[in-house]
Image: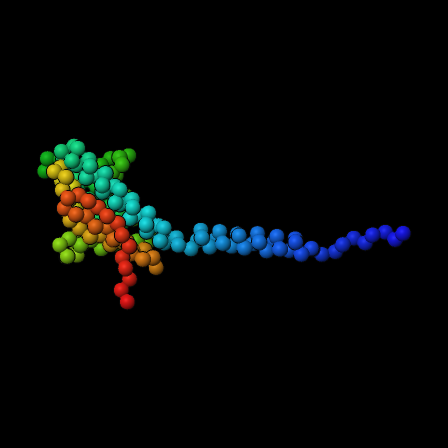
Length: 168
């Protein structure tokens, strides 16, 4: 009897398994990398909405106005202490926050664009009043090629986030 020959190469099953593994990894990488701007922008919008809602609740519960200053680098919550606006401590939930890198914003009140705040002594552009009211506003956030997000605040304190439809 002749000794059996050692097989050389790969079987069809082995090649198919490798192709499936590569396809799964490519799909996972595409999902992880693609849509990064959309996820980051949605997260930034939801975080601002949640923090503003929390600030308005705190203003109402504490009986003290809380303002929001929006600048090119980020935003900060300030509480009215007598006649002075004072920042929250760095370890507080309402501490100053930076915008994500590359994020652009446009703040509008009564249909007019409001300039970003500059300097440490900036006056709040938005205020949560102790009565439960809020300065009405429309804040549009955009990042990269993602569809812009708009955060609308109503006088009654309601804050909503929605995607801005692209104009054709």
